Amino acid sequence: MPPAKIDLNLFVVFEAIYNKRNLTHAADLLCVTQPAVSNALARMRGTFNDPLFVSSSRGMIPTPLAERMYSQIGEALHLLKTAARQGDSFDPATAQQVFRVSMADLAEALLLPVLGETLEKEAPGLRIESYYTSRSEISQELATGAVHLAVDVPLIDDPMLFHAPLSVDRYACLLRADHPFRGDSLGLDDYLALGHIHVSSRKQGAGHVDATLARIGRKRTIQMRVQHYLVAPLIAQRTDLALTAPISLLRRHEGRILELPFEVAPLEWHCYWHRSLDQDQANQWLRDKFIATMRSAQNGQ
Image (cartoon, rainbow, N blue to C red):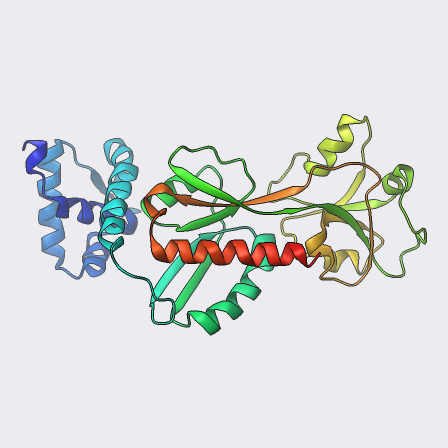
């Protein structure tokens, strides 16, 4: 079949099979019968001269060709859906929509409580689904529309993505109120004499603060490594361990906040979206709310 004769509806079926890995579940998603999905798959197999999906105990497994096709098909369908919405006016007061956003737990803590208040007042029909997508996958997730917005540090380099700065947050050190260290300021030796909490989603490897110390030939003692920022202050409040983290987080918890005795580059947050959504009114509205919320939090520091 010549490419110009390909039925674009087949790509919708392709995406459903890929995501569900099951013909019956794909049919349920598309609100069609399972034989209709099977027939569409047969047509696609003939068109591309490839099985595309192979039945196994783990479901319908995509072939290498199907894997290569998936991101392009997903992006094409996303562009078509976006183009169809471009002319629609967006009224937050009446909109019924789900926004899927990618952010880590610290960004969730800074953004979502205030954003939740905003949605209740201005857009009660909108829903937010937040989960973290790894940096290696975020470009594809944004391209296919699986994610609408992402909040991350400015390390994502993809010409198909647009981004805007949200905030800049400096690092400081938190000690519990009755910590044995009673000084009003930390010297470098004081800081290095403490035991420390290190926050990282990775199983191993140095962090931002440790890389800074390494450049001046020093090293701190990490006595506890945790995955999430939100648990770290709770540990610091019950132990003699010190927590070095963005000050916007530390100010939400009881304890003494001390300035660091060495310079650490601040934490920058950026908001990312796919270029196909740049003019989408709903996406623009949420981006503006993200920016206003983060800047408000920063000014409150």
